[in-house]
Length: 319
Image 1 (tube, rainbow, N blue to C red):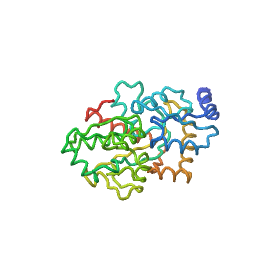
Image 2 (cartoon, helix red, strand yellow):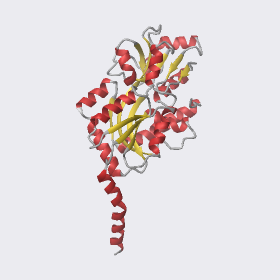
Image 3 (cartoon, one colour):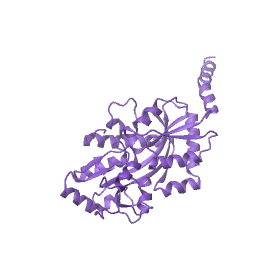
Image 4 (cartoon, rainbow, N blue to C red):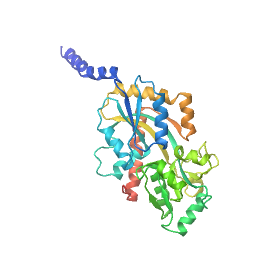
């Protein structure tokens, strides 16, 4: 009788969760993107959203600002029913160290769903710039301390910024960091000659590089990009061992029922594997990660330790 009672209690406990999962999605799903339209994260998010087959539309909602924490806070506080998701980027992992007064934990307050893709970080200059190589730029920075400036994609909490900060720290360079709310305004500033360089995801910079308006000096990944095979890595040129990428993945609020997470993981994986989606993602410089919920959760936790440690070591502060 005790066993029967326990079984009945377990069934009663699981029933609401299973019922909710079976009804999911009962309305459009909102995919919150932490940066402005037009950047790498926005491009990949929209390609995926259009390919999803959930039975309900996926609405992309851009919430830029504060290094992605505005978007993350919104999702962390949303109902844990799978209808509000975060399109997380690599900078999400470092927000706890960068913003000590956050009202959420970037790891503990989210349920990992899937790792989607990763793109190299590219250091680029205007095509009319006198700097032809990364070595040229480094030499100029050493000759003119504090005179050169560089944008870092979406701001201090992005890996595009952190990768450049790591480069500056290791090489002891005095280069002014200029914050922007997203990739698009940073690229506009670079094209307009307002800044000397931009450190951003290849997905964001590739069109302007291919169009001849920007010059890529190096990529921060340990291997060259298949999209820019003639562009050397930072490790090849000025800093051996350098390796950083801008990754993308999906997070749900903590407590989202496992059946809902499983359904989302399955559908996002299927969408990412569609030939037209894979081609579009690769065309903007990203490569698939193929990480399930468990793998992505472990990966995000490891990235939080890595970039959080760097932020604390360098004493970086949020703009």
